[in-house]
Image 1 (cartoon, rainbow, N blue to C red):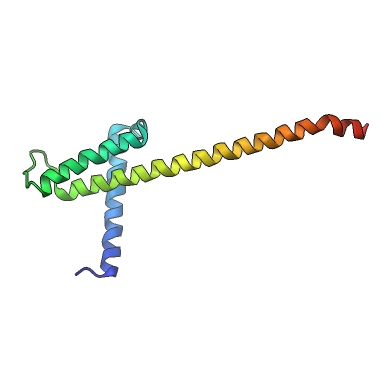
Image 2: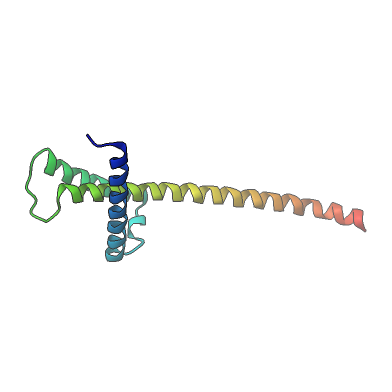
Amino acid sequence: MITIKERRRLAKVMAKKILRIIEEKSHDYGNDGWQDLGLKGNFADVHKKYVRLKELVWKGVKPRVKESVEETYLDLTGYGLLGMILIESEKSNVQKRAASREDGKGLRRAHQHLPALRKRNS
């Protein structure tokens, strides 16, 4: 049985591997490619890895290309991480747009009151 301490240590090792894989693939495929199709594209990537893993684990298919169960899990986890980054990025963009709209409303309200302020001050 794996202890909590060992699980944390292994999680840190795996996280470093996943980040390295993401960086290597970003270099090979281009940094923005994974963002082009958003969550639907990310889902397609996750689904491909799921199908691959199902073939390797459940059906016992021997891979023709050199991609082990471990590598497939690392890729799948990396795609999950990229999906979460897309979600967080979208949340951030929505918040920025909402803040921008609120700023704009405040400016419009201020501009609406300018004529009255000018009259009072003259």
